[in-house]
Image (tube, rainbow over all chains, first blue to last red; front, side, top):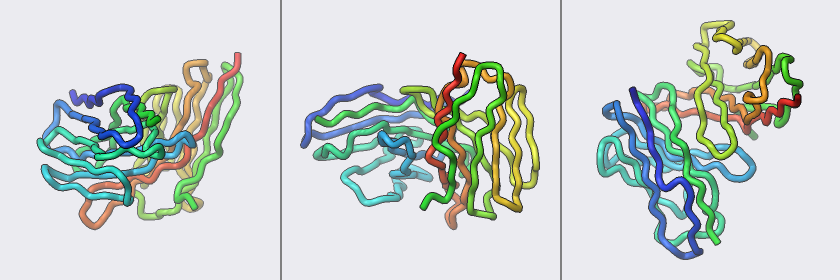
Length: 111
Length: 114
């Protein structure tokens, strides 16, 4: 069966520091991968999606970037964090545009 | 505004039925989804319905779809305290490169009281 992992689970970082969040999927090949942010107001905002290695599309302009160095690995990064980057970051996968399955999330607090 | 709209809050007594409503705008959506999020956790897929269906039942969950009115509902029978969570409605929107975008509602906070 397929599983999706995210780490770290929680992170507290100072403003201006770099960020790297990792997401990995097991049990499937060539998944579509997604990064979402969930702010305190609960809504989910799609940040990036990827349909293959090295293929990244950004949904909204922001302080973050994403990379997909391997088929089942998706990384969310920032060179310098802003206070507004605080939130709950969720990774998801799907099989060729079908149902999306979510990871456990990373709680990021920028101080 | 939101493409998918939900009421923000629902309070229900333990043992009663809960009904969470959702409206969407994209008539070409192929699938409509319900996800559950418990505090501090990711989204858990509860159920989904294909757009050519009117109803789907899965144990305590019943999904009703009215395509004419673009209205989706989730009924939870015999609501338990463990059903307290945020419930998200989502519609699928196929893009030109077929990567499968989901448009989420803002979520309905369900609180189950003893």
